[in-house]
Image (tube, rainbow, N blue to C red; front, side, top):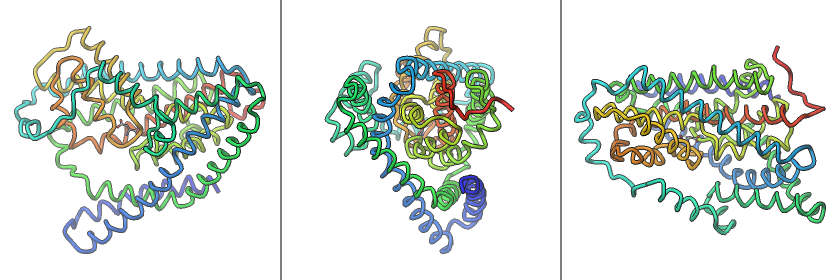
Amino acid sequence: MLKSLNTQILVAAVLGIAFGWLLSLSPQSDWSGNSLYVLSLLSSFFIGLLKMLLIPLIFSSIVVGVANLQAVGNFGKAWKITLLCFFTTTTCALLLGLLCAHVFQPGVGLDISLFKDAMDAHHTPDTLSPSAFFTNFLQNTLINPFKAMAENNVLAVVIFALLLGAIIVSGRGKFQQVHDLFQQVFDMMMQLVKWVMVIAPLGIFALMAKLIATEDFAVLGSLAKFAAVVTGTTIFHGVVVLPLLLWIFGRVSPLRFFRVARPALITAFATSSSSATMPLSMQCAQNLGVRPQIVGFVVPLGAQLNMDGTALYEAAAALFIANLMGLELSITQQFIVCLTAMLASLGAPGIPSAGMVTMIMVLQSVGLPAEAIAILLPIDRILDTVRTVVNVQGDIMISAVVQHHIGDDDSSLQAPT
Ligand code: ASP
């Protein structure tokens, strides 16, 4: 069933691209308008279902994940390995972003005045200095958990769930009933995910067709070099760096990884949202052989905190803007860019174009004008597709690495073939 669903999703994505292209040939026609309307309905239906599951799934899976980690192995070790993996892969992505921006120098030779109108017309949100970012971060994360759930504030929900999981562990059996209750809620949510997956091919078809039919690919022209460098580097990170790390530290064959993780990766591409993709990421990680306890802990945390594609993009984009303005960033400034890009990727929610908002902080940290994001906005939706795939890929991959390292006698992860 799953194998065929995996194939169905791939076929749906290809058909969606073809149909979107057909629609873009006659944008003014009635049939194209009607088709777009139906596609919007279908994609909203699919995304709506995923979003509906998101908060209960994240909440129950983290509580259960943390509570169960104690039972399956070394809780402290799992934590450390997870955070170390997040840090290592994000650092690799940042360095790669900087390196490629240096080698290919996108933006050099382009004139910033070309983009003056866009920058003037753009209303920049409030300034986002690192100190303002931290204040915001605290104010938005340590809040009433019910409010957080109602407002889809994922980070606040994650923090409360982590605390609740830790309390269950510290109770040493005292809160067993609550633990069992959350376990059942989690099992029910995963069952619901399976139901929603039945319409995934239709949802992916609609999302892809809508994306291709409505994006203005013409604007890619003036920014083509930057778009190509960022996309190429992100793909390199996803196809070479991450699989290599997975093979070395998780002993999972890259081919097998891509085959099993394909539904989640295609969904990430089509939705540009790690959060919306999370239910699938968890399923794919389990299909890879990672135990539910580890999946439930690592994947939701990663969907919020681990975004290699976003970090890479933000670092490369800051250098691109500096090039456009004819500025050379010193080594210290580049280090600051990396640091803020890492923070920005931690704080960015897993929704479309979230990276654009936190990008303001990266630009401002080295004195670049925040209005410059107006230059990137027209191509952001397209670039967001690939970086979200890599964000999601990192989460699934790290769950396999964590499983490999905390020891697992009955692991079904296979060694490289
Ligand atoms: N869309 C990305 C994600 O959901 C975040 C970003 O805009 O970079 O992972």
